[in-house]
Image (cartoon, rainbow, N blue to C red):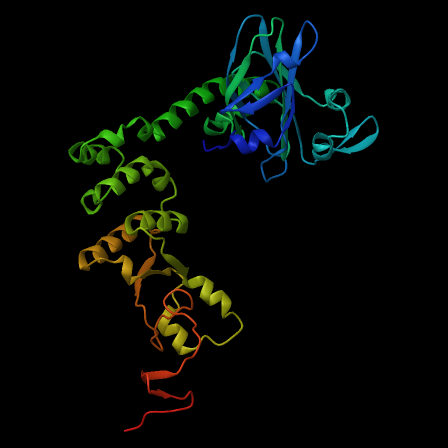
Length: 378
């Protein structure tokens, strides 16, 4: 059961619409003192969250909030495959509506009121039933009767919904009348399982890495399955353990190899896959010089590292060990150490291990200089 998630940060919060509330110091806060009436209501409407795929079935919304006195929070949501929706027989682009400051808030809320699928009150964990579409919008209303502050310090949206029923025997899916109820019922347990699995996967966040001696770092490294713990310097090893789950999640990808080697070397390497070279030569002759340099094995790739980042022979062997650990299965990783010189017929790349410079005269001393078109002969 793999899901993606939008974890709200400053950028995501500020992309939405605020009325009577602000985002500051990591929290969405209602400014009750700036609102009129006996019941002060602050409203936040999100910008469209884009799943990237049409007919996405959204799964869940979680948020952590604090309410004081006689106050409460309501949350509403809406999903669609298009940003243009029909309201009162008129096509309206929701993004333009939300971002248009010339339209007052009451008019915006009136237009949007008919769209919300469902509204929940004071819930920190909501299953997004019937939310199907590429885009998702949500509205938060923070209501207080005694001008007490209300704060939301965390919010995340999970997608897509992958029902646990798909992992059960087929007869659980045969009765269509009860399918929706069973799916929603099992969804409660599915959320518990998913949260538990997420905690297990991110167990490294509970490790007190910064104040741990190397002896215990080696012990922790066994917990997260780190190979070759002795090749790392202490500070880099701490960083590696902190990010170990993320690295092993992406193991076998170009991005992962670049990140791991950048951490070990202090500088990101350049990775070139042979199949991209072959695509470049498609329809043309793959000459022998190119074949000699880059081979014709589509399951191979080249890792280019400048020699100034390789300290000694041991460091070179350690880089090879890391490549073997994080490369895709059944592929051939070829490590190339780039010298800071231009060698014809070898791996020479402009701006990496070679550069362009202006021509200049060869000056032997203050009294003698060779002109540009001179040559030296025996």
